[in-house]
Length: 296
Image 1 (cartoon, rainbow, N blue to C red):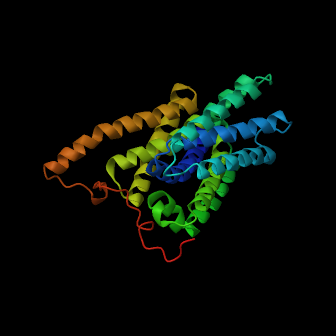
Image 2 (image 1 turned 135 degrees about the horizontal axis):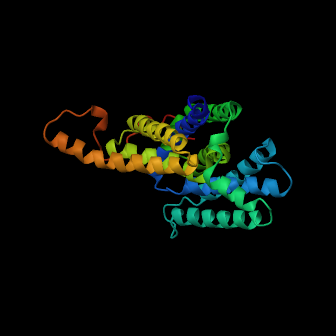
Image 3 (image 1 turned 30 degrees about the vertical axis):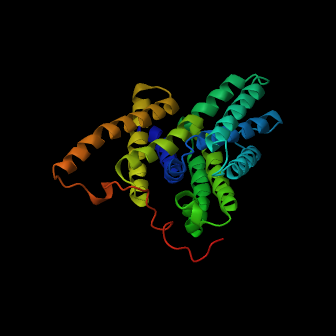
């Protein structure tokens, strides 16, 4: 069984590494459903590519998906306005609904439309190959290097946006890199798992700490437990991997929420708790809060 579950497990863990980082940004911004919207926009791009004659999973199909996410990123970066009478989350929700409806309409013109919609939601993780894993890993390395080189403005736009000049430009670059990650992960993991792996580990992390680096490590740890446990159970019970993984993430969140009061009571009784679990009033990013020598 190990040889069967190894490839999808490694692939899911690679997806987790990138999505957990973006999840911390998304939770801090309070735009929880932006991942779901971008994932659905990427799925719309792939559907359009198939409708005009290109095969799913080809470079052209990925190009269509990424082009659509860039449009979504442009919309989201320019809809971020502090004094707007319309919350940005409303714009994100509208975009998601319209993209979802368009995918359903386009799929209705295809004989395989129902199966295509199902794959869009649940993915094809169980059939992933090592070539797919390397392709996704290579794409994520590029995004990681980009965020490392521009780590100061990338963190500032989420944690201290009032101190970052050219906010919309950097916001668009953030969504462009985020959309690239989404484009690579949705065909494999599906919309539901992509949303779960982005949001739930970040929520679990912020239950215990408000420090960015500690939260990132906790998100990776909790996501790893959910992925390994979920994929193993799906093979043992012979059930669909994608939906079960989403349920595994939900179970991990419930467990983390149940354990947290025990840790709080333990601290109240003077039981020593690791320093990184100390909650603070604000989410602290050691880079974003440093004075910026270059505001651009």
